[in-house]
Image (cartoon, rainbow over all chains, first blue to last red; front, side, top):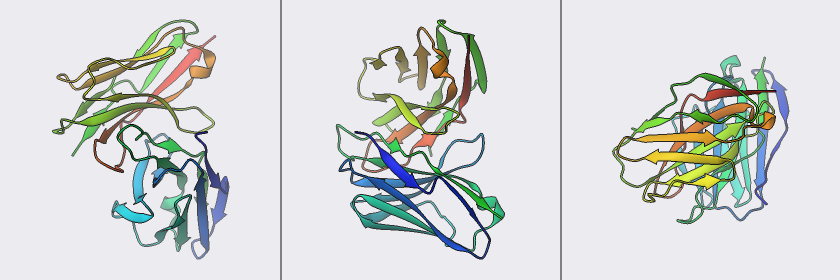
Length: 114
Length: 115
């Protein structure tokens, strides 16, 4: 089973709203990732959690706030977003061992900021 | 910093044909991983094939195979007997060989398989 789930599938929010994206995996993976993907572009890394600790922050604006409550769950809290933040937000996870290191992606949340 | 270049923005072939997608990368690392991911119009990113840099043998997964040339920093993907379901955006990606690391993606190649 290589399933990563993300909710919601679509989200429309105003610039003053607060919302959260959720990502879940039950593969026992110890690393989880948030990527942002604009139309017709490759994904760009935002954050990496390794063993529930934030290990990489790619200089993401503070209006994006990640949270990893446990090893299976990853959230991305959104506040005071800008229209240019509209994108597909992808979550991924990996086992983080020498033998198993590939990242598995969820279906994404399509975010529109109005 | 690592960079990945895919020189073919779009490709189109007939069903059952063989197609090769190109990828080159630049890195000073000696140990690393390379991947091909597929993203169909439904948008889910799917891992197609992976290659460890320390392995000389080219990876294969059913109809998908790679030609890994470490000295030339080249990592092409060959799809044999192409099928309509292979229509997708294909991304080549690089990752360092140490812990949880970011994937560095190329710009992608949009592949269309025509009936």
